[in-house]
Length: 178
Image (tube, rainbow, N blue to C red; front, side, top):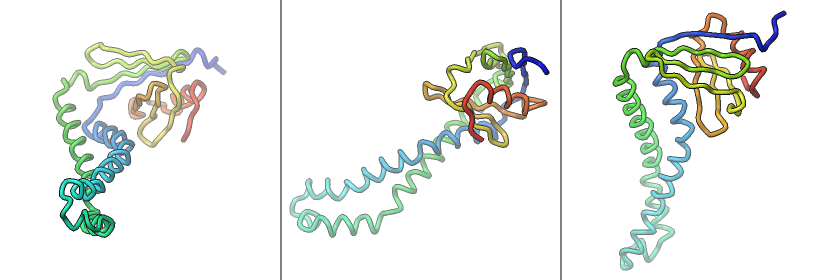
């Protein structure tokens, strides 16, 4: 049996538009509850602010009933705002992705006992030691690496001929889930 420190796993793939959409959607959904809560708080403050601005209005005379009426009539607005947020993020991400040169969309991954290295088609690279990764999660298409500094990296399993070997290497160096 080989020594785990001698294992090097390499793979190359072209990042597709579908990969970009999946990654963007996954990262946006994490932030979506925060956005909806902020929109709801701002939304529920509208009748209160209105009653402060217009002290002679019905909202100022019966604030609880008017706030309940306002919420009953407009409860869908924070949800619609959240969905529009997701749509806006997807459109911006698609525009940004389509502007990338084709060479930049080709990624080469290399993993060994020290960490992972990412290199794009133009030669730009980044090294990520295992000690900087807080947690790894495996899905059917990706290994998701959550960094200690709050960033997230998606490793496409389609890049590797033997993705089990990569997962074993990640699992020996990083706390895993999935």
